[in-house]
Length: 266
Length: 266
DNA sequence: TCGATTCCCGTATACCCTACGGAAATAACC
DNA sequence: GGTTATTTCCGTAGGGTATACGGGAATCGA
Image (cartoon, rainbow over all chains, first blue to last red; front, side, top):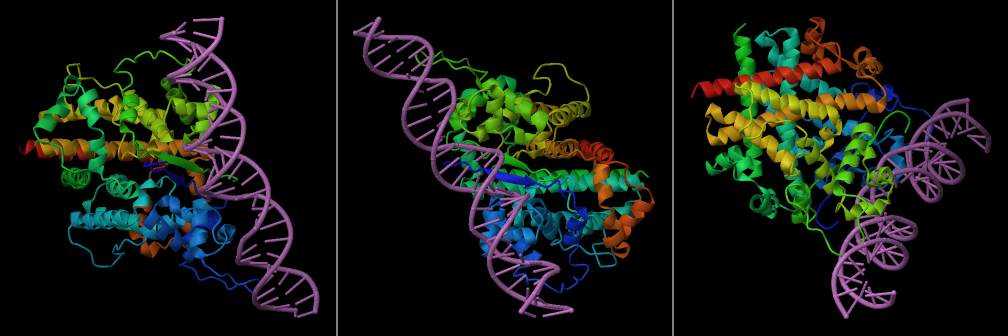
């Protein structure tokens, strides 16, 4: 491999048959452990493993957070990790919920912005910052997510934000899902752009420039009049990063406009 | 591995340094080939490889579309594929653009629905159906996408749809990006739910049922009043599939409402 | 001191992608 | 027809991944 970078992404279909163990790990900080009596003392702890995985993924991409990589960073044998974490799937679950919990969202009873849109804004900004800190999140599937404290806190906050709109309970839930779908996806795209630039060492602009042949050799103006019109009207952003940021803002604003309009006709 | 399934997903950061070759492959059907003079006759053809990759991914998941798997399905040695396709990255690019091109969207001058919202609807339904046919698409990164005929046709159609709204050129483009972001993400989530059910052999409802401990042991009603309220008001859908479908519809409708409102105030 | 218990981890298996280089087939030319 | 250039075919090997297995090492209670 010369320039291209290959990322292998592990997708959690979590549990592997022992959901109780996974839940206990996810919620490990809400119950205190029973000190076991006999046996060798552990040299690590689950949080060490999870933290190291996150750090490696942040610095060198999700690939670096392999079982071997994490073990080496911790100075232990690869198989040692399996005494702390049942599998790579679970480790990824734990990493995800950990960073979800990093978002600073007010809990029930705590002070928050007055306007519901500003509250959603807070959610969206915290989530966006999370993706910027941990761009590998964009590569992790969100179906059957880790149902840990971080995920539940996010859902709770967003639902609480929407309750005052007095939509039907069903619509309130659906609106929250629509918002998270959009925010996660747009923020993930934005972060992924950064990640790919760092991982390949090539700017997005250089990538497009390499593909100049497209416009000169293959692009047919007759078949793409709208693209051509937008192009000539200078409708395309100068950089991919700018386009991603604009899209994020614009789409979220329009989505919230739509939800607001629906709430006001009730 | 007992129950859990691990998917390794290859993410294209395409090109690997030879963008001309990639473009030539993506647009292979728009220029006719020059018949080479000497040398052994090929027993396959790029389309055979791409089609087989798509078929395997459809039937048995993206994992099955490995170089070895595709080669075996074609009855050739693994390394033979490399005479048709420079790498796995490129193969995935070709698979993606192929299925993007499957969408039946009217080109310039061809008849289409009168209302712009119905036109967007057509785009969204075609895209959604595409994700249902090829759920592995949800696992493929869309940054630095394959700029082939399928992708360009989709962008052209959507932009043409939005032009009559008379937004600024910049906003027209941004609105199109916001729509594709939402549609791809929501449709991808929906398809992925199906995929995971098929891959694990476990329904989403069974998955949640396995996690009953969450509510009984870990869930704190005090810290999650909004979730609890929605729950008691029967706000949660009965099935994950239903929730995904509702979210898709609701979010797209509100997003289009927002765009329409903006267009009408001009 | 002697289990019992727990942690540590080397080895082996089964995948993955792909660089390399030689064998086989074909066409053009002499 | 023989030679040569060109292209396809693909076995082997190397380096990556996750993890099942089983034995060795450490620690506590009795």
